[in-house]
Image (cartoon, rainbow, N blue to C red; front, top):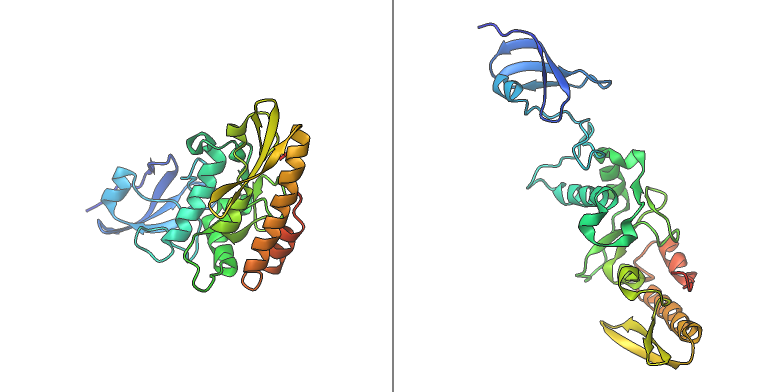
Length: 249
């Protein structure tokens, strides 16, 4: 049987060309892009265009799998890492789906747009905490406040309890400073504490209420940092201990 050597687009629009035919279950294709990736495939998959090019930007038009040992198949041991990578890209390039203005104008560095690079960094930097049952979150702006770029230099894994310390709900609280709400002609300062809302006092101005919140919140962050000190990276501990709550947060 002979097969016409031609060029066909895969489902992501990348041209692929048959460069060698042995039989219907053994043909070699080369993708006609700058990477020239070659792959052994079935003839039917070539005809259907379902051959995957590891350089196709399949996640939000940005992320691609790349070539390497890290897999992305459901059921594979690396799949949870892949999900973290995919969700990171979705947060940056499809932020409306997350209903959180904190992801507006965020981006992923070019290095991490390649899944292989992110997975290697994950392997080198992920850590566990004995008897901790919560989630470990990928954070981009504790080490460098207000950072908007996911990258190896900016990111770190943190226990979810720490990550939740920095949720400010700006899109819900209106124009008042963080930790402040109005009560008649006065202002209440309050702060999340031990899964509850702790009231800190009633003040004549929003600035006074904010200062009460700032004092309590910064000390609370230090207390949580001390709780995890022996388990978390030193640079995370220092960032927590030096954290300053600002009225513009």
